Image (cartoon, rainbow over all chains, first blue to last red; front, side):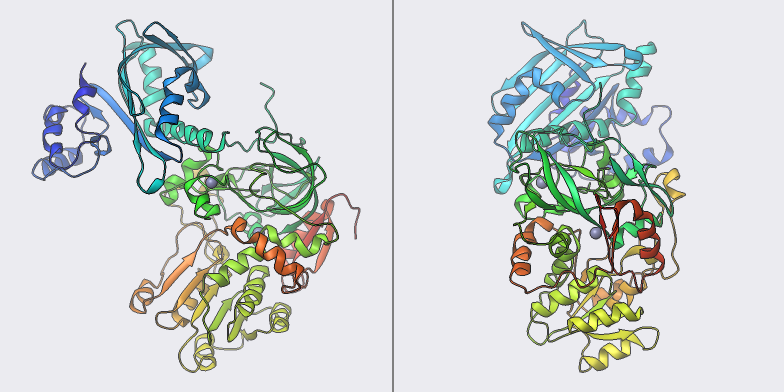
Length: 222
Length: 394
Ligand SMILES: [Zn+2]
Ligand SMILES: [Zn+2]
């Protein structure tokens, strides 16, 4: 389950690294996978003959790497990276901008995420921080007992020209089997990029303006 | 409260709806004293803007009195304010560059998806202008919730009549920015398509900015008369070959700058990647972007093209060749109201700009549907309608 470690080279790797990254991601194996459209195969064969480009691996014309689905997004926030890092590192802040996350509690080195599910049910994800560099990066990985197998990381980099901080979040996950799996697939796979970008946009609003935009007429009764 | 609500093509009604209240810390609640029907409201009325829901409150040109404030608002209860139609946070990358109508933080995130897909980037929030721009309840109502009230609204000194300052909310800065986008130089001829309210303010602004002459193009006699009164020369396109006339009136050079103050009403959306249920609202007008094409043909080589007119989708047979081969510059966009509003208030106070000449009708809010009907169908005489909530009739 070192897929995100492998990915480390790709999402933010540059240029020539990418050829190796493609191999590391098991793209070759995917070629034989059932269900891939002819077009995808063709373009991948084509791509195999091409030098790598500078784009993050996750922006490739595929969203699964091996058994894992990967999504990520970058947003520039007009705040210093230390402030943004500190806000994120206090995981109890995350439900403020993550729509589906009901609560985040930390006990020892294990963080427990309660994620809203259908029909009032919720699913629990347990993660451990696997890397923590103040002001720069936080990475986490699911524990063995977590209901979802997932890894993620968020990186904070100074943006050019005094624009603040580039915040890049990337999440890889392997949907489990069964009913839970079908629900999670629905939650994440249908529009994973949309989920990710909405959450980062809410974070940006909260940090830059102190509030999250709404067009409601008044506070909802709930 | 009472509010003008949209229920479908050519179906607007004054309904009783919930009062707004403070939600976010920077909000204020405004009791509306004056609100106008805009030419761009007619795009909604005609059903050519997607992302409308039955019951949406229209209106983006409004002013009134502050009746409630959130803890982070800088307004005080009782302040008289004009509210920009663009909702802007004041602190994002775009607001810092004074590109207020490109604000990243005012359109609720779920509403950003459509324009992110349609345009490549999401657009900012606007009052009363479809769910593409946030689904914010508009100002043709007794009360409005105004987000970021510490950035947008401008406080109006007592003693200035509503009618003299109301248009700071949209059409005056929009006309002004349209002229500013022409980078007017000494000796310039500026041609303006459309003598609606924005076109008329663009004409007035271009003359204030020192244009040698402004030539206005329309076909409504009354609107052309208003343009002439401002000091413009006029062309009635039903009587005259516009391109020939513009060449002859500019010494065979062509206008140095052109302004399309007509917009999309003549072309509608192409429905490529718009949802199916939106497609049903899509209209395809007969004129098909004629004003913009003609403007691109008319403007001199190396000239400037300013587009304040509203477009939302795709335009067929766009004369890209004329654009490239003549080396034209195009500038457009929703108005950065907050950038211009203070300066324009001063120009009104100094008597430099006349802001009331185009108002043809003042109606109580309850008569708003009649205002829409006439503004849409009787354009010669109904040049600008101002609604007065809280009055029984004027
Ligand atoms: Zn308007
Ligand atoms: Zn902003």
